[in-house]
Figure 1: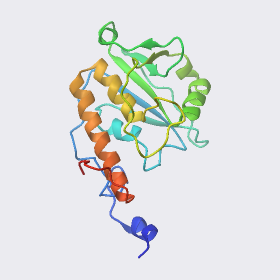
Figure 2: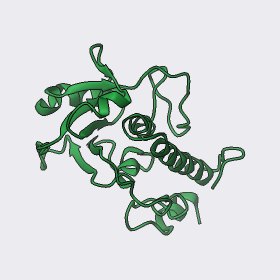
Figure 3: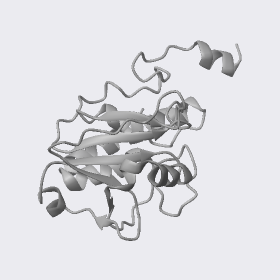
Figure 4: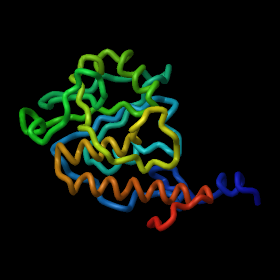
Length: 204
C-alpha cells in the first residue's frame, strides 16, 4: 500500500477529521474563559490539515468559527452584544495587549483572521464589520515560532494558534497560554512524525 493510499484509508477523528495519530482533541477539556474567540478562517485555509486556528477554537469554550470567501455562504455579522470586540491584527495604530486592557471594560471577544498574511490582510480590508473593530497586537517578543509545518513569509510570524495562545495568556492567565502552547506543540510534533520527519525529543 502506497503512502497516499494509506493516508486516504487511515482512521480519522470524527470531530477534527485529522488522522487519529495526529488528532489532539482529547488532550484537554475546553477552557472556560471570560474572553471569547471569534475565528474567521479564509476558505482556502479552513480544510487544511496543518490549520491551527480551528484547533485553538476547539479548546476555548464558546468559540465561533466562520468562513470567509465561499460564494454560497456569505460571512455573517457576529452578535457582540454585551461584549468588547477587538481584532488581533498588527496595524500601525493597534493597541498592544496588556492585562489592564482585559479589565478595562466589557468582556473581550477576540476576533482572529485565520489564513496566511495576504489572506488575513484581505479579510480585514474587505469584511466591513472587521474593518470597524479596534485592532490589538501582541507585545514584542524574542520567542520564535514552533510551527515547523510551514514557512512564514514574515519575520517573527506566528501560527494562528500561537498568536491566540499568547493573546489569551495576556487577557486571561499564563496557565491558559501554557495549555494551548502544549497542545499546539503536540499537534506539530505528531504531524511532523506522520510526515516521517519527527522533531527530536518531542512528546507524541
